[in-house]
View (cartoon, rainbow, N blue to C red):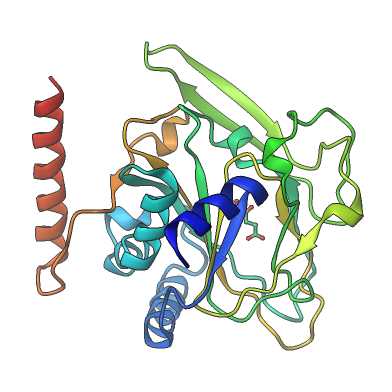
Length: 270
Ligand SMILES: O=C(O)CCC(=O)C(=O)O
């Protein structure tokens, strides 16, 4: 997709779907890694920033296709804030993810937050794929009437810190939209290896996987433009995703290189 079309669709609708970002071997490799980790750790790791330690996650969030779309939209160097694997297996108890705006639970300044939702299986409304409300990123912030559409309401409490060092706890609940009609919700069809890039203020969520045999596998990640302040303490340390990394380098070398790069940039800013 041409960069100007990408940007104008993103600005108008609040999201764009970009197909074939990841090839099938990369998807398989990532899923096999994730399965091994979950078997070893008897469950899902809780860290939202596994890209610092795990090469599979590092490769995913620095994928050149993803980085080039983010750079085109942001017109700045993107930095990754968090990334999490969110599978919804077929035949398990149904659960959606309540409708929400990411800017309410990932507060940033200036307003550069972008979600990147990567499908690792074929996804659609039936198997719990991503649903969006096109254009909702331009609407006023939501008020307080619960509209869950059957998706699970979640409540998050996060520790925050502003640039002056002031700290506080922020409480956010999904599903509180008084102007959201079910007719406005669009379930997206996102093939395996494709990604949805969406504005931090876009209302989105997902419904249950009601299929008997189609797993919904996806990674949800969030990025900001370089220079953006992230208020949440648990994800305040963001990572540059544009520095080229040779796959022959060891992971330790690659992290060391990034740290050196960051130190050099900080020094330039002093
Ligand atoms: O994976 C989902 O169903 C929802 C993901 C989401 O809310 C996000 O990426 O911000």
